Length: 204
Image 1 (cartoon, helix red, strand yellow):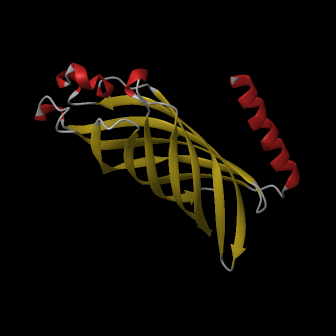
Image 2: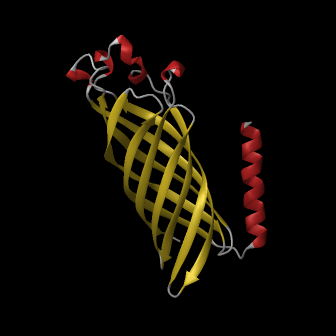
Image 3: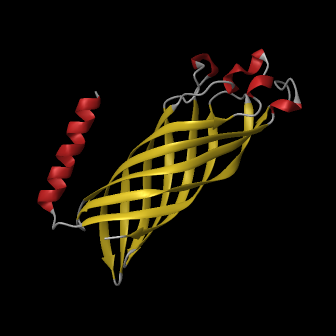
């Protein structure tokens, strides 16, 4: 499966390179996100929380088509508030925070509008957890095992838009979580969904 994905990405890159005038960019980016955990069981409520992202991006292609792989550190969090009838103690209320390395691989197109270029992008995102801060983990009772253990790898689908102006790049994206981020399969499906806004600068 991994070989198939890699070969597919290489094929897309080759296609874009041959179909467009060469345009390679390498740059840095930073921004913030607003995250929310979605669950298909009514176990807890949660509030949106703000996190950050910082990393690098590359882009290969032209106005018609391009591929944009990225890699960045990101903090994703949500405030968990278990339902009153399920909560054994107020101690289990708190923040759930992940520090991840995210690797999106986006395909996109651009539309020149005067001095700016409007772009549309979409593609998969692979997220690798490097740290998890779960302050209520040891206080959760048996009825809330769903909140104890989470996987160390997530994946999402990303869609977004943005503008390029000179060497500056602004992106607004939505990440829709795939699969179940909880290790407890009987707990129902939990996904991490978020909006991100970032500012980038192309070094060349």
